[in-house]
Image 1 (cartoon, helix red, strand yellow):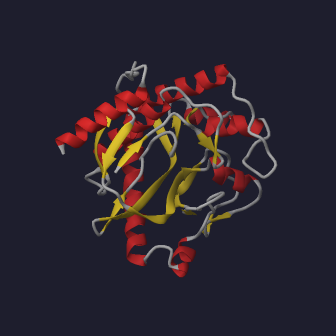
Image 2 (cartoon, one colour):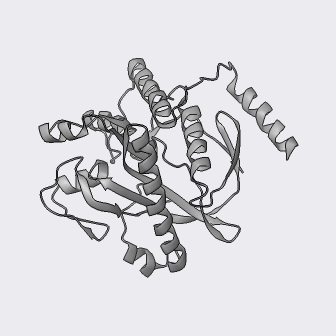
Length: 282
């Protein structure tokens, strides 16, 4: 199958009204970078990227669970904790934690893959009780999730970053559990800048992060969390440009490579040409 990464951006399960220049290229190239780097840890679907916005690989039958793993208290988990909840997906968290604090150990907090609407948190016990994923496959997914997170955390440290949390999606490819989605991109992962992390935590100031969370925070500040009756706020050109620059910055920080924006005036023509060349080679 071929996947084309567009410049669309979503948050709270809604596609926002304006595209982000180069976002698709950034995401596709970060995903390809890490899929190549982690293929010795877990088999994955990716074969090649014939175009800056395109990846080509094996089709997989997905397991309808997202494997979310968290090393720090942030984002959705922090919002639940702040509201008074101490149990997330059946895992008990201690009292007294602050936003961005490291957790005693990384925790896996799965969510269901909803056909419509929002994904929902779910415990390991419920996944197995409902038969959403067969137990042998689920245990393999847990093992892969922990190994990928450990590898991603190490790679992030080497680049001056902290991998805060991320999610992986698995499926069945040729009879085995296989990673079937992006990995360690800013759409699936949250990163903090490691320099100054301890000082910021001690002072109680916000951590500097590189992820899509700043988009969610911008939406929340303007009264949108995807709930019924809420309207997506207008996105200014300055904000769109800011988001684009944040994505490019993360690409360069994560990979250590200089981002080369493709100058093509007609992206659809470029994609078609490159994809046809790939198919002819196969």
